[in-house]
Image 1: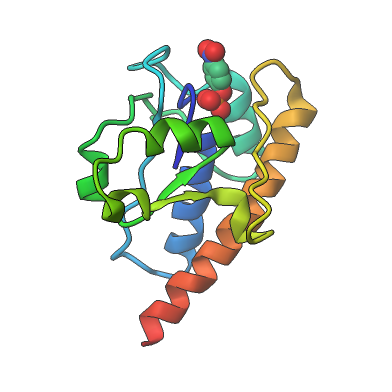
Image 2: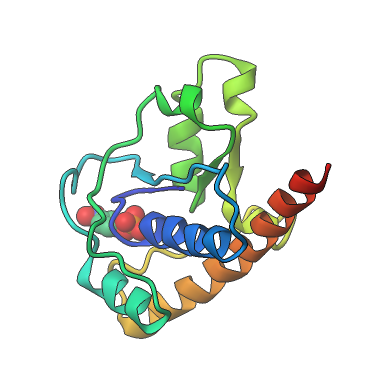
Length: 153
Ligand code: 4NP
Protein backbone atom coordinates (compact mmCIF):
# COMPACT_ATOMS: atom_id res chain seq x y z
CA UNK A 1 0.00 0.00 0.00
CA UNK A 2 1.68 3.21 -1.12
CA UNK A 3 0.82 6.89 -0.69
CA UNK A 4 2.92 10.06 -0.48
CA UNK A 5 3.75 10.49 3.21
CA UNK A 6 3.00 6.99 4.55
CA UNK A 7 1.24 8.54 7.52
CA UNK A 8 -2.41 8.76 6.38
CA UNK A 9 -3.82 6.66 3.54
CA UNK A 10 -1.41 3.76 3.09
CA UNK A 11 -0.99 2.87 6.79
CA UNK A 12 -4.78 2.86 7.01
CA UNK A 13 -5.09 0.61 3.95
CA UNK A 14 -2.49 -1.77 5.35
CA UNK A 15 -4.14 -1.98 8.77
CA UNK A 16 -7.61 -2.51 7.27
CA UNK A 17 -6.45 -5.35 5.03
CA UNK A 18 -4.49 -7.01 7.86
CA UNK A 19 -7.56 -6.87 10.10
CA UNK A 20 -9.68 -8.52 7.41
CA UNK A 21 -7.05 -11.21 6.77
CA UNK A 22 -6.75 -11.93 10.49
CA UNK A 23 -10.52 -12.28 10.78
CA UNK A 24 -10.38 -14.98 8.09
CA UNK A 25 -7.27 -16.63 9.59
CA UNK A 26 -5.33 -16.01 6.40
CA UNK A 27 -1.66 -15.92 7.37
CA UNK A 28 0.17 -16.40 4.08
CA UNK A 29 -0.26 -12.82 2.88
CA UNK A 30 2.27 -10.17 3.83
CA UNK A 31 1.01 -6.62 3.79
CA UNK A 32 3.11 -3.49 4.23
CA UNK A 33 2.90 0.21 3.45
CA UNK A 34 5.30 2.89 2.29
CA UNK A 35 5.42 6.47 1.03
CA UNK A 36 6.88 7.69 -2.23
CA UNK A 37 8.45 10.55 -0.26
CA UNK A 38 10.78 10.45 2.75
CA UNK A 39 9.04 13.46 4.37
CA UNK A 40 7.91 11.47 7.40
CA UNK A 41 10.29 8.50 7.39
CA UNK A 42 10.58 7.03 10.88
CA UNK A 43 7.58 9.04 12.08
CA UNK A 44 4.28 7.87 13.48
CA UNK A 45 0.98 7.83 11.64
CA UNK A 46 -0.88 11.16 11.60
CA UNK A 47 -2.92 11.47 14.83
CA UNK A 48 -6.11 11.70 12.75
CA UNK A 49 -5.23 8.40 11.05
CA UNK A 50 -4.81 6.83 14.50
CA UNK A 51 -8.11 8.34 15.69
CA UNK A 52 -9.95 7.05 12.64
CA UNK A 53 -8.44 3.61 13.12
CA UNK A 54 -9.45 3.58 16.80
CA UNK A 55 -13.07 4.25 15.86
CA UNK A 56 -12.97 1.06 13.79
CA UNK A 57 -11.07 -1.08 16.29
CA UNK A 58 -7.71 -0.70 14.57
CA UNK A 59 -4.53 0.20 16.45
CA UNK A 60 -2.11 2.23 14.35
CA UNK A 61 0.15 3.34 17.22
CA UNK A 62 3.08 1.10 16.23
CA UNK A 63 3.20 2.30 12.61
CA UNK A 64 6.43 3.96 11.51
CA UNK A 65 6.67 5.60 8.11
CA UNK A 66 9.16 4.40 5.53
CA UNK A 67 9.94 5.32 1.95
CA UNK A 68 9.10 3.04 -0.97
CA UNK A 69 12.22 1.50 -2.49
CA UNK A 70 12.96 -0.47 -5.64
CA UNK A 71 13.45 -3.49 -3.35
CA UNK A 72 9.68 -3.51 -2.77
CA UNK A 73 9.23 -4.75 -6.36
CA UNK A 74 11.08 -7.94 -5.35
CA UNK A 75 9.24 -8.40 -2.06
CA UNK A 76 5.63 -7.84 -3.14
CA UNK A 77 3.37 -9.31 -5.84
CA UNK A 78 1.02 -6.34 -5.83
CA UNK A 79 1.67 -2.67 -5.19
CA UNK A 80 -1.41 -0.54 -4.59
CA UNK A 81 -1.07 3.18 -5.22
CA UNK A 82 -3.52 5.47 -3.42
CA UNK A 83 -3.54 8.15 -6.12
CA UNK A 84 -2.42 8.83 -9.66
CA UNK A 85 0.72 10.72 -8.58
CA UNK A 86 1.81 7.84 -6.35
CA UNK A 87 1.05 5.54 -9.28
CA UNK A 88 3.33 7.34 -11.71
CA UNK A 89 6.04 7.89 -9.07
CA UNK A 90 6.14 4.13 -8.39
CA UNK A 91 5.93 3.24 -12.07
CA UNK A 92 8.91 5.51 -12.81
CA UNK A 93 11.00 3.30 -10.53
CA UNK A 94 10.06 0.07 -12.29
CA UNK A 95 12.86 -1.29 -14.45
CA UNK A 96 10.99 -4.06 -16.23
CA UNK A 97 7.51 -5.00 -17.42
CA UNK A 98 6.99 -7.53 -14.59
CA UNK A 99 7.57 -4.79 -12.03
CA UNK A 100 5.34 -2.26 -13.77
CA UNK A 101 2.53 -4.81 -13.95
CA UNK A 102 2.49 -5.15 -10.17
CA UNK A 103 1.40 -1.53 -9.73
CA UNK A 104 -2.35 -0.92 -9.40
CA UNK A 105 -4.61 1.95 -8.42
CA UNK A 106 -6.37 0.71 -5.29
CA UNK A 107 -9.76 2.23 -6.17
CA UNK A 108 -9.78 0.27 -9.43
CA UNK A 109 -10.72 -2.66 -7.18
CA UNK A 110 -14.08 -0.90 -6.70
CA UNK A 111 -14.40 0.80 -10.12
CA UNK A 112 -12.22 -1.16 -12.54
CA UNK A 113 -10.49 1.04 -15.08
CA UNK A 114 -11.79 4.32 -13.64
CA UNK A 115 -8.37 5.22 -12.20
CA UNK A 116 -9.91 7.16 -9.32
CA UNK A 117 -7.63 8.50 -6.58
CA UNK A 118 -8.07 8.23 -2.82
CA UNK A 119 -8.16 11.93 -1.87
CA UNK A 120 -5.29 13.07 0.32
CA UNK A 121 -6.86 13.84 3.72
CA UNK A 122 -3.71 15.57 5.01
CA UNK A 123 -5.19 19.07 4.59
CA UNK A 124 -8.66 17.94 5.62
CA UNK A 125 -10.42 17.09 8.84
CA UNK A 126 -11.89 14.13 10.67
CA UNK A 127 -14.68 13.72 8.10
CA UNK A 128 -12.15 13.42 5.28
CA UNK A 129 -10.32 10.71 7.18
CA UNK A 130 -13.59 8.85 7.68
CA UNK A 131 -14.37 9.10 3.96
CA UNK A 132 -10.93 7.71 3.15
CA UNK A 133 -11.46 4.91 5.66
CA UNK A 134 -14.78 3.96 4.03
CA UNK A 135 -13.23 3.90 0.52
CA UNK A 136 -10.29 1.79 1.65
CA UNK A 137 -12.54 -0.55 3.62
CA UNK A 138 -14.58 -1.21 0.48
CA UNK A 139 -11.50 -1.72 -1.69
CA UNK A 140 -9.97 -4.09 0.89
CA UNK A 141 -13.17 -6.13 0.99
CA UNK A 142 -12.71 -6.80 -2.71
CA UNK A 143 -8.99 -7.53 -2.33
CA UNK A 144 -9.86 -9.98 0.46
CA UNK A 145 -12.45 -11.70 -1.76
CA UNK A 146 -9.79 -12.15 -4.45
CA UNK A 147 -7.34 -13.61 -1.93
CA UNK A 148 -10.02 -15.97 -0.62
CA UNK A 149 -10.75 -17.15 -4.17
CA UNK A 150 -7.04 -17.86 -4.66
CA UNK A 151 -7.01 -19.84 -1.40
CA UNK A 152 -9.69 -22.15 -2.77
CA UNK A 153 -7.81 -22.88 -6.00
P1 4NP B 1 -0.50 10.44 2.94
O1 4NP B 1 -0.83 11.97 3.32
O2 4NP B 1 0.25 10.49 1.63
O3 4NP B 1 -1.85 9.82 2.81
O4 4NP B 1 0.33 9.88 4.08
C1 4NP B 1 0.15 12.96 3.35
C2 4NP B 1 0.90 13.15 4.48
C3 4NP B 1 1.85 14.14 4.51
C4 4NP B 1 2.07 14.94 3.40
C5 4NP B 1 1.32 14.74 2.27
C6 4NP B 1 0.36 13.74 2.23
N1 4NP B 1 3.04 15.97 3.45
O5 4NP B 1 3.15 16.74 2.46
O6 4NP B 1 3.79 16.07 4.41
